[in-house]
Length: 430
Ligand SMILES: NC(=O)N[C@@H](CC(=O)O)C(=O)O
Ligand SMILES: [Zn+2]
Ligand SMILES: [Zn+2]
Image (tube, rainbow, N blue to C red; front, side, top):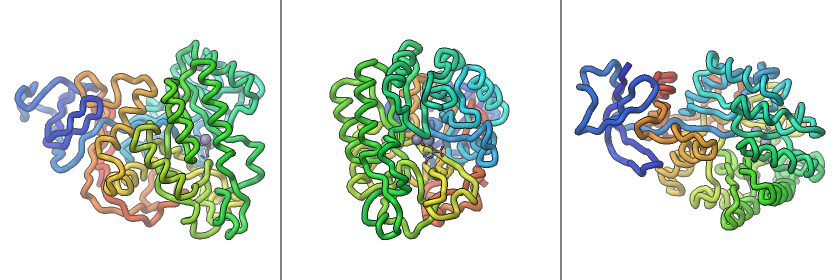
């Protein structure tokens, strides 16, 4: 099967290619072709996709997603999460292991990978837990999970409190060539906080989460990574001091990378209109100066990647006071239009930088040399995005089981038109 994507604005951060052109696909790979040297006549392609006026970019890679499968399938499944991903232009997701049971051995990683190939239209990389049952007491089967292709370990949902155990995990991860994806939260500093500490929490009569909850663990984890030499990836950075510490770590030459979520880049705690559980996530929405630091960090590449931390929950777990609500918001279907509208259209991020932070950098962090680019030989995982389309975020249209978003009703510019995974069209806008 040969597919031709015609006349799109090709955006490939790995080569810097930014021009109107064609992409040719044979089977599941992109093939070497230029306008002057097409592999076939246009009539001979099995499928021709007209991408005029659209951006053609390497499929987005989301380093941080909760698919809730197995065990919490009332919130999301491999199928619904995978469909939400490709609708959002995301072709590979890293699934966090805080399922039920938690993914803590090689067989559990393999089981998700086997099922995902059948059930999810997006590619799924299952990350492994750091400790057995995410219990924080003994190490998970890190070697077995590495063999099953987990790419990284993460205790996401919490931090490993025991620094000694965490250091052992890092040493083992390094031996196995795995990264450690760190959720940074000093639980003993949380004191039942449910939103950012500050004026808005006081006005709403809610307990606050200070920046130090994140910052002290970011510092600890960077120092442990320095000692062990493991590749450390910091999840959902939300504070200005996190950005400063990542910058310092990079200047010191450490193998530290970091991600930031759309909600932390766009919303502040001050903008939380009322005590509504749909504004509750971990880490919480922060102050304006944190948001400014995150934006600067992303623009300058101190923060490497945008990841959604897609965290679906059932309606009854979110449509309530922040005191009762579960932590987490969805993001797969809204990330690209939000980042395009709020950061690219506003001039904070170039369009090429956007693609770099959402595809090329995540591929590099995961060590996936055949994704994150549109060069010949790469997997034909491709997102076709119309930057002109006007739209609104409407939960009613979500294919995720989760509708817990703080962005409902918001106007956005840009829409995913088609998503290809391995050369096959897996999503098409109606
Ligand atoms: N981010 C969240 O608020 N919630 C996540 C856990 C996590 O990412 O830490 C979840 O699993 O629901
Ligand atoms: Zn987390
Ligand atoms: Zn998470």
